[in-house]
Length: 129
Image (cartoon, rainbow, N blue to C red; front, side, top):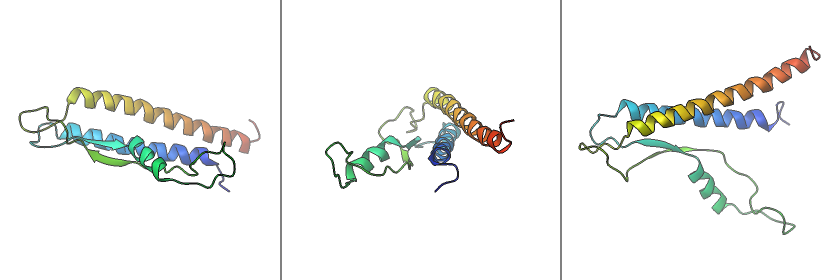
């Protein structure tokens, strides 16, 4: 039994994903002029789809889902299928900056949600005050 339930664990995994995505975006922006540098991205949906296709669960009723556990892992991938610059580099600064802004909003919303969860726990511990 987990002290905080699965919500804190899920939020923690989401924060790890967002941090890894931020690192990949930062590396892409830092290497914008590096010859033959290939942009990196953090993939979650690909891993999820691959995992779902390989899972097999015993079903006792036809209404049960065909999978039993979803791995919420992610991985960093190289984007090798495009070339934007004359030097072989495929970093698009506009896309990277948009992705960075989107990821920062996502990260901040996760932090706010965790703060809310711990604030609720703190309120319970103090007896509702």
